[in-house]
Image (cartoon, rainbow, N blue to C red):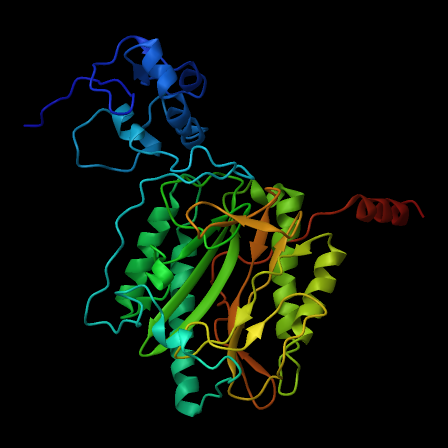
Length: 412
């Protein structure tokens, strides 16, 4: 028999039974079971409680909190369950609309039978820190085959996670899907505990530039979301990411489509240059030129990198023009290109978690990444999309100039 529980006040650390006082904002957004014991208690808890409104906006059904509360074995009222979720940085001046929703789920574990990278316990990538930054590895045939295998697995994992994308789910759920898919493939999710990152993938919505931590935030129709997947399998790493439209609303937003599709095209243009002899510095020029043509800016802080038995070995791959990167592409090199474009300023700031990187003006960003192998004649994109991969390009929205040209042709 399940014991019922009398409704308690939603005030943090308040043990009183709830009275008849309801939060007026909750009533406006359809949350009909949001009660406090007194007006004073309500005022004291306002800064924390208002986070619930961000979570619940548009996500209620029949006036209850059923759809926005993850399942819980605890026997508590639905309102008390929502009260578990909170903004861990209530005094931080966020630049955009995205907020962290805590608590984070516990760090997931990987069976010991699966090989672990050296940071899995300590959080410190010791071997990577000892690398000679001027030495670029050239893989032999065996190493190249190992990279093909791990990159194929990484593509499978990204597609599995992306297939789950829809409004109403949390990024923590996507982390669980990613983690399980990695383990099923006898792979370790490379981000897990890398420099103490707490999750198995990075989820970066809207104005989050990169390295967003999966949490309890619910994805909304109209969001855009970058999924950044990295795997460690049989001694080698793979790295790829894509930005996706959540629901259909984002696909009708010209600015969101512009930044997402322009970033996708920038990556494709850079990859087209990869062949033996191409200077590494050349990728940034083509990326920045195309970004500017669409009124987007390149976030210059972040770049591509080598990848093989280490997660982030040399070379460093800048994505902006007039960079001073040294070196040229050579057969056997494996590296990533992963441009990040923004609709507004290219400057970014960190949230207090020291991971989540966001645009300084709160404008949206997008990123795409592939791992590639330089061959004797050109390039092999090791993490290439499959025919049935979720997502993919959509048409750029028509601009006023396009409409004028069409009308001019019609009336000519």
